[in-house]
Image (cartoon, rainbow, N blue to C red):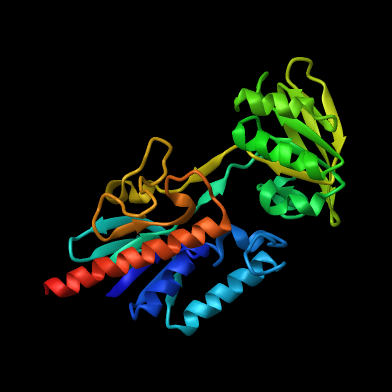
Amino acid sequence: MHDVVIIGGGPAGMTAALYALRANRSAMILEKNAFGGQIAYSPKVENYPGTDSLSGSELADRLFQQVTRLGAEFDVAEAVGLEDHGAFKAVLGDDGTVYEGRSVIIASGAKHRRLNVPGEAELEGRGICYCAVCDGDFYRGKRVAMVGGGNTALQEALFLSDLCEHVTVIQNLDFFTGEERLARALIRRGNVKCFFGAQVSSIQGDHGGLSCVLVRLERSGEELRIPLDGLFVAIGLEPENGPFAGVAGLNEYGYIAADESCLTKTPGVFAAGDCRSKRIRQLTTAMADGTVAAIAACGYLSGLDAAQ
């Protein structure tokens, strides 16, 4: 039985472990893929306060080493269920293992929606990016494209237009779905060209990275070949909170319904990072959530201890 079982080994989960361990609580971290989460795939991180630049994998390694030195236990496993038994919680692993904890912090993150076209998987991290704020500066003075038409895509395309030589915006609908003021501002930019009713059909490149995208215009059926240095995709996020819905509670978009206090509807169950309902999803906000959730979990455990 652990004091805290943490679902997810990204920045939020490992920060939560750090604070729990420093409060002399035992922690078990479950991660289904690679420790570090999405940040581990970023070639450079330059928005982490106090650090000019480091790779995402280096940051992930530092976090992992820090929490394991403090005594964190970990397992590579996918959480496929969560049960509330009052004084303890049971996290069900995909191999049948049951992890028992007096409290649980869900830090399962959210994944960027993919285009699911040929070449995307092979070139991810080598010209294909999902966060302009994180990676836009690497393409300063270069030619890039943005796929998407919502607020995030428009905001990031505007951001990129200040850095890059040229920005091509590819929107599958005949109009932008984001705010009109953002759309107007983007269309006025002299180094931006927008294609509406357009779909990326494939992405091409070689060992050196991305070279171009093929875009199909729905009305005419014409296929365009657009040479690029970078492709940014902003077509939404997908939380993976289904296994926790009954205990944690989800909003209409599938995110855990927890506010800045990181509390869910079930006492002893907390949510941190991109998996919870929030407006800003960045490395620093994920770590902040991990801090808040861990302190809340430790307070909950202190209350249990005092009641015994």
